[in-house]
Length: 109
Image 1 (cartoon, rainbow, N blue to C red):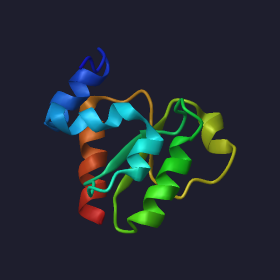
Image 2 (image 1 turned 60 degrees about the vertical axis):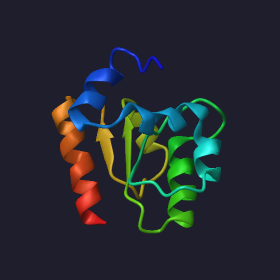
Image 3 (image 1 turned 135 degrees about the vertical axis):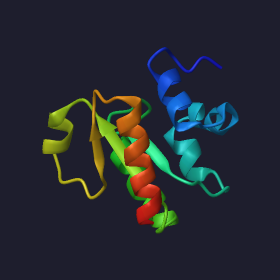
């Protein structure tokens, strides 16, 4: 699986096993329908496939109320369009900042 040049350093910084990411390539709808519990949902607000990252977060929160959710975006207008009830990590960010944000969300829940 090719995670892309920008994703690989982030995955290494978080020490996430690549097998944990395999499920994520199938898209937001597959994640919502997945029955196994997740430790965290991390999604861009703007994603392809008809469902936004915000919609994904809302569906996952309704299904798993205690699930930590962290969103990201490089588009400030994506945030201005409507209030976001989830923490948002603005792009660009360093892997260490992502790691910190993930750890914070996992601790909070």
